[in-house]
Length: 171
Ligand SMILES: [Zn+2]
Image (tube, rainbow, N blue to C red; front, side):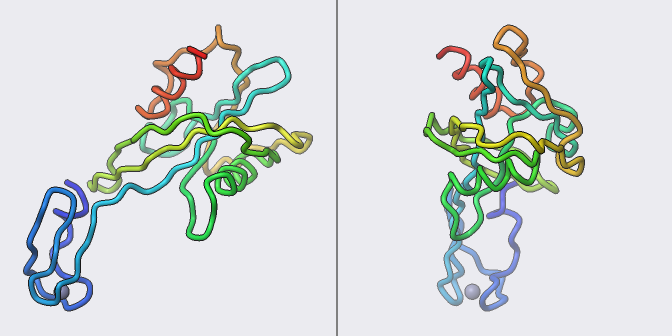
C-alpha cells in the first residue's frame, strides 16, 4: 500500500474523511490535500583512472547484501549534486564532484509495508580526493572498483540501479 492508503486521519484536523484520487487525497472536513510525490535520490557514478566503477554492498534492506551505487536522498535545501557529494563523503569518506547529469529513473520499494517512489538522478562524478577512503559499515559492508567486464547486472538489487548500470554499460 502507498502512503495515501496508509493515512487514516487528517494531520491538520484529525478527521477521517478523505476523498481519494489516484495520486492525491483531500480531507473533506478542512480541505487539506496530500499528494503522492516522488522523493529525489542522487546516485553517484564514480569511475577511477582505469575506468572502473565504484560499487558498494548494501548493509540494509531493501535489497540487503546486493551491489549498489553510492548516493541517497536529497535533503531540504540541497541540490542533487550537493546531496550526492555529501552522501559519498558519508558512505566512503571520498571527496567527489558531481559533474554531469546522466539520466533519471523512477524507483519503487517498500519500507515498513509502505510503498515509496524515489526518482533517482544519476550523475557522473569526478574523484577529487580518495586518499582517506574508509567505508561506513552502517550503510555498506563492502566496496569494489569493477571493470565493465566484471559487472554482473543481476548482482545489483534495486531495479532503478540495475537499469542505470545497464544504461551505463551501453555508453
Ligand atoms: Zn482535515
